[in-house]
Image 1: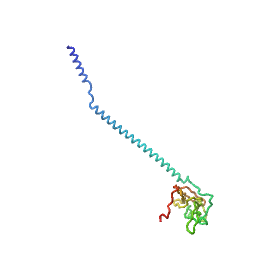
Image 2: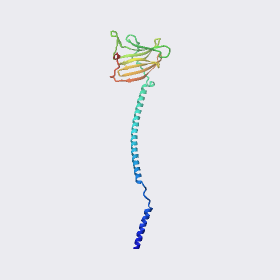
Image 3: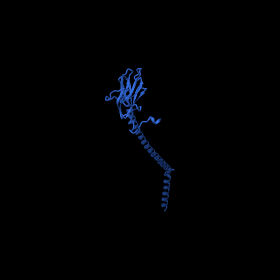
Image 4: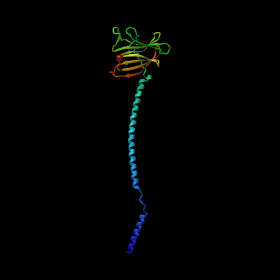
Amino acid sequence: MRRASVAILLAATAAVFVACSSPPPPSGTSMEVEELSAQVAELTAVNQRLEAENRELEARVAELDAKVKELELRNQNLADRLSPEEREVNLINPRFPPAVGGEPGWEYHQVLSADLDNDGMEERVSVTTNAFWMEDRKEFGWDDGHPWHVYVEEPDGTRTYLFSDWVQLGKLDVILDREGPGVFIVYRRDGGMIIYRATYQGPGQFRTVLSYQIPLSYSATWANPDMFR
């Protein structure tokens, strides 16, 4: 009986020793875990939002890149259209022999004067076509097309033709380019407008380039001066 009591006492003592020697559980562990879990969840949400914003920005960048490429292509096309070095043209058609404005059959005749070759003397630039003058109406009659001529005339009468060709459903005007000097040959037609620039260095010496063209619908119409009276 005594031995059993001693055994029980020893077991109790050992249990107390083990309990005293084991480290106590850290204080607040579950609270810290919850806080860390909340932070992880918050960071995960922020990361997902940033990823969504990044995808949106990437899509926007791709869209802007496409627009930049489109603008670059349009600018290149425009540069090709406006490049005088690459668009030199010959507006002399040998099928239409030179004509002189004011002579019979060539009553339509417009003239401007300027020193085009910087020699100190003015040249005359003439535009003429064979539209027929209607004396009773005091106006010109027009067909669907006419041969047109643009030429530069020196004081001694020497002529250099810049344009000799057929113009269908249209007309020519000449405008002085004071910065050149040179002249713009404006070809207006139902389908749009073509502008040529001609530089004149002397008799028989000239260069003509396609300066610009404006395509229009064939249903477009030019303003009538009578509309503004």
